[in-house]
Image 1 (tube, rainbow, N blue to C red):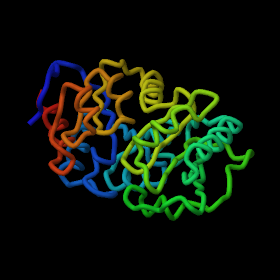
Image 2: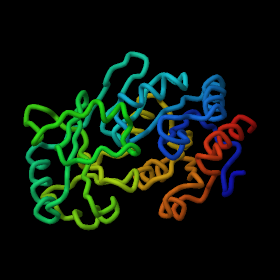
Image 3: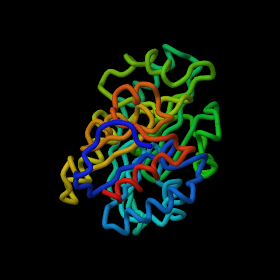
Amino acid sequence: MIVGPYDPLMDVRLVATDLDGTALSEGLNMSPRVTAAIAAVREAGIIVVFVTARNWRSVAVIAKSAGVGGMAICSNGAVLYNLDDQAVVAAHHLDHAALVDFMTRCREVEPEVAFAWESAHEAFREESFPLRSPPLSKIYVASLQVSPRPEQHTPITKVMVSHPNLGAEQLLERLRECSAVSLSASISGPHFLEVCADGVTKAFALSSLCDSLGIAQEQVLAIGDQPNDLPMLEWAGRPVAMGNSHPGVLAAIAEHTATNLEDGLAIVLEELLLT
């Protein structure tokens, strides 16, 4: 059952859904009910866009199993990927000098931090960066190359920061002032902090995509569960928080659905098709 206000007459033309903790029940798994609901929404002519912190490699696998094509927003908005053409359409990069400065300052504050970083086509990690799975998928872990530092000739789209004793929220507080320039820091789970270029968020990428498709903000239904979803949820015409959401997300978003283990996304989509 959905709890909270929504306008049943709202003309939804696009559904933007997070993956982990939202469309996925566990790991890379999407339940049959969620898969069927997504297919029904697409058959009704509504665009479904996966909007996720994951990189495009694992998103492509998930989308294939769900029968979803079109565009996907990956790496917290830093990469736009065409699932049909299997190609990166757009990528937003961190300034290399700002990135090196950030990593240096982080290590001065917390010497035990470890980093991983992505370009639009490759993924790298320091040897000390932990290979947790979850939250890191086996596909992602397999793609990680060990490197001592980001190379200047490789444009970086996202950085992950881990610490053996500090969670993501503690890291965010400790490292907030570690950059001489503004960066977009976000949390998609408890284990590590994620950093993109200034202004690059899920909302930034979703707004740009909707503009290119001629879809108005009020015609977008967005659903998610973590702090990195909040910019997207607050931007969308109809935001929905999963029942398993981070407390800050539940407090900020009025409409709630069931948890991901209870097919909360499917409940929203099924009711959408009944209106």
